[in-house]
Length: 463
Image (cartoon, rainbow, N blue to C red; front, side, top):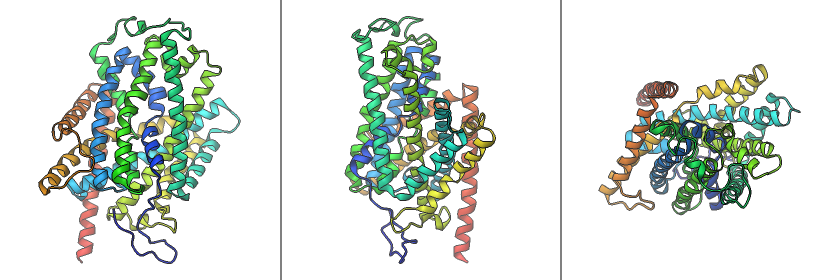
């Protein structure tokens, strides 16, 4: 990361970000960053296509994300930068690769921000139909824009408490699930693990169901990478990023796999209850207002993701600007070292979505979700390739890694092979195949535009 340049009297041209994230905030961000609708709602869809064997889908996807996060952690501990995977792609494969990865991720995330504001507004307006959907979306965009403009410390504190709440809810869910399974709390299905093997067995849809579940589960882990973007604004990044990355392992094992184990054990996999498994398990435990509580928790999880993605997208475009891959004004920071222009650029589409919510509240969320592709898979592939290249260079130069990837190069290549297998599986599903092709086409288009822009910039510089 660049060192601080001399600031003007107003601080508007200061180049460095503020290392204001506390270790506890970074660790809780790592714990809570991917706990969202992927777990609360997406898991129900995955259970519907795979049955109890969705546990295998989660284990495979969990192994992939653990490997990828360890590789990202190795690079982030050695070279913390707000561009994270984009910055590492540039170091490993050149400026066109860095620009392509960065712009692709940023473009998708600004759409995700709009979708999350819309989704939270839709959820809360259905629970509490006092304010119109478009007004709630506007309130959310204004509030979280303001939080991000106030500085990284305010953002970190907000995410800390969001994560505390989500983790507390998951822990409560696991405790109630254990009480239902052991029979301490009576359940309509009875105690024990019978539901894992009844209703067609553990593999009711065969291995094809496991594969279909894997494709759904993979997207549930999106957001975990944000912790490496935040590394650039954390004191003692080498130590604290390592602690945060290591927390990913037990979070996936306990939170995701533990929660899904409760769902498929307490509920018959082929029942209507699995469409909203979180609420259904709470209802089995006779928790009053289970549906309303679940709806509120999901809305909070979506707003937490909105806050985190706004932070991540602003830092990505800031890093691209610093590296000469985006307009220069986007790397300006104010006296508090907040990249305000980068924040504003990242929220503009969200405010456009407020207008869309006013004009067409019924279809806005569906349209926004259709725009979001499988960017996370492209980012993970670039991470694997970048880490393999950069680690070989570091080993050749005799550099010691503060957070080395396990079993290099074998586990790095295994992660890349598993991601390739996910792509192959994706093309067996027509809807997923279209999404993958769209993302590949968008990636190619951004790469071409980036190459042209870099060539023109170089030519202008030489004149």
